[in-house]
Image (tube, rainbow, N blue to C red; front, side):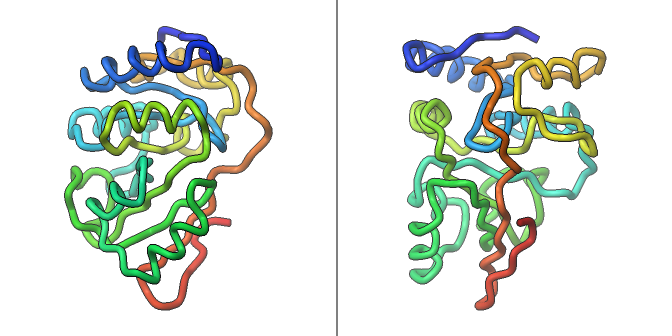
Length: 196
């Protein structure tokens, strides 16, 4: 695992390098507005499979997706006008919204019926999403069943002895204590909180 330190002064330069890594199908452990996440090109089937191997996640369990805008979300999911109003209220932020899937992404990402999307509120990640122009995986950077990581050191400690590891860790120091995003299913008229 290669570690790149990031700070506001080098965000632009590191984002350019990260884009090249994503284009090659690499998986990055990256700080987000909640915890460190495993970031890969959500349109790249091989990269998505690699995220699942790294995480040790069972097949069929959906992965959340980061998008750069509501317009990008609408390309991936069916969004009604009332749902769009809701998205505008909660995004960007720590809320993953489950919507009806248009099945534009690899089936390994989740169910055929629904997809979990989020616009994060984190400067570097938003810069990366805009520079890359495609949706990215947004699952926490930890082995399934283990606690999420709030520092690059924790990511390194969890994955260093494993066969499958993220190729790059973007180091931003210890993040403020935060839980993973809240998940709200809006596919029916009654919104359902899946994870608080």
